[in-house]
Image (cartoon, rainbow, N blue to C red; front, side, top):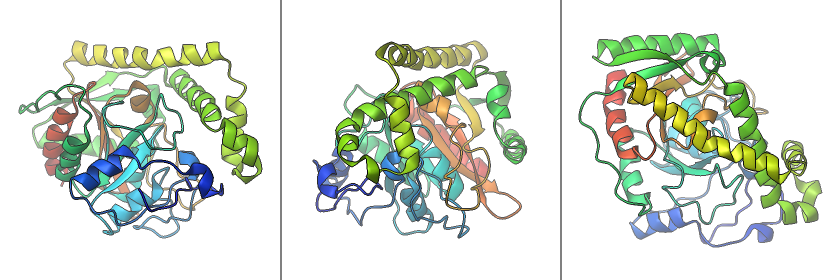
Length: 347
C-alpha cells in the first residue's frame, strides 16, 4: 500500500523493492476500504518464517507465507487481510488459524504490484471470518474477464480424492476428514470417494521446479547485488532455479493445464461439483522454524482451480483444523455460494 515500506519479509533495502501500490489494494481503497497496516510474511513468500505466532497457541506456527494476514483475522485485529498463494500460502494459514481462506481462479484477480515469487503460479487471495465477506470481496476484486457463472442453488455433490494425495495427510487429518464427511452426510450432502491425483509426486516435482526457476528469474538483479542478505532457504531456491533450463521449465508449465483438464474430466465423469480435502496435513506444528507442509494445497494451485478453506473443528489439543473445497475453473461464485451452505452445516 502507498505510504508503507515494503520489505517482502526480507533484509533487503526497502528502496530496492519500492514500486507502485498493488492494484487489489487500490481497488479496495476506492471502494472505501481503510488500510490498517501491513502484516508479516515469510521471506519473499517462500518458507523462511517471520516472528508471527498462531493466535490460538503461542509457540505454534500460523502457517505461511501469509502468516500475519491469517493471524490478524484470527485475532480479531481486522475483518479482511490479503495474502498470496504460490503453493499453499492462503489455504494452509487459514486452516492453522481457524479462519476462512479464499484462493480465486488463477488470473481472475490482479497480481499487479506484488513482488512475485513465481508469476505462473502466484494467486492473490484473502482471509475473512466467514464466507459471506469473502464473497463480497471476490465480487469487488474480480477482473473483467467476462461475467462469473451464476451461483448454483442446488446442493453440490462432493468427492474426496483418495489415493497417494490423501495419503500425504496425517492420520489425524484423515480421521478429521472422515468425521467431516459424516457431518455433511447428516446434513444431506452426498460425499463420494474418487481415486484422483495418483501422480501427486510428479505434480509436486513439476510445481517446485516452476517455483524455483521463476523465482530465480524474478530475483536475478536483487540477488546479484544482495545474495548475502537472503535467508538460506530462499538462497537455496534461487540457486536451484538458476540450474533449470528453458526446456525443462516449458515442459513443467505444460502440466498446469494438463492437470486442470484431468481434474475437470474426473468431475464430469463422476458428477462431482466440489473436491473435499484437508486444508493442511494436520494442525499447526509447534515452533516457528517451519510454516508447515503445503502439499494438500499444491495440486489445486498447480491447476489454478478456485479453492475455499473453511474452519471445521479442532483437534484434541484445541488447535484448529480446516477443510478445503475446490471447484471447476472460473466457478468462483458457485464455490462461494456452496461454501456458505457447507459452512453452516459444519458450524
